Length: 201
View 1 (cartoon, one colour):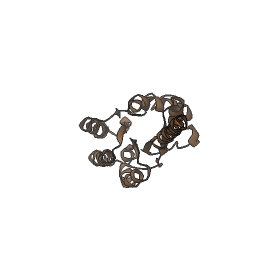
View 2 (cartoon, rainbow, N blue to C red; view 1 turned 60 degrees about the horizontal axis):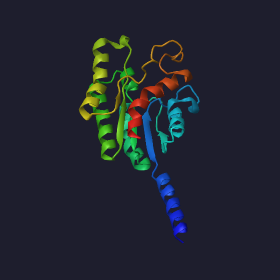
View 3 (cartoon, helix red, strand yellow; view 1 turned 135 degrees about the vertical axis):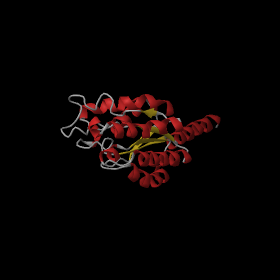
View 4 (tube, rainbow, N blue to C red; view 1 turned 90 degrees about the vertical axis):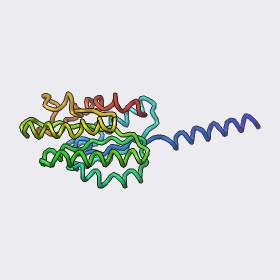
């Protein structure tokens, strides 16, 4: 009888651990939506594969939309948090804000609101920074970078200052549009994120 009870407890514990598996929510734009690629080739799917390889019991929800801005991400986030109850939220937005010349202060406010909503929902936040090409002007590109840097510093966030490090401007790593990474660049994107994400899992 005791053996049976112990076995039943073990089964329940295993079931509970599976039920409590954490969710990693990625809220991004075309870079995380694997624009121009098969979804299976994107860094977000590679992240799911790495979690499985590392025996980390988390599932990844990719809520990234090509063309999305920080304002769009902010509008969508409350519903995503309610639906998925994530343990970690990865925010990868801002590139489209910059390409449209939107004010960096507005970007900072939108990202800060997303961070605060996520923290209020008891989720850890990873912020992925974007850097703009110099042809958009030194003053604007500096203010744009500061929108990310200051927020990460103020909220003490796990932070990747330049998500496209080792990819942006590197021969063979960008598609013909020079905006979106190639399939061969996706592993580097994941490697840029992993060191700040892994301690949270």
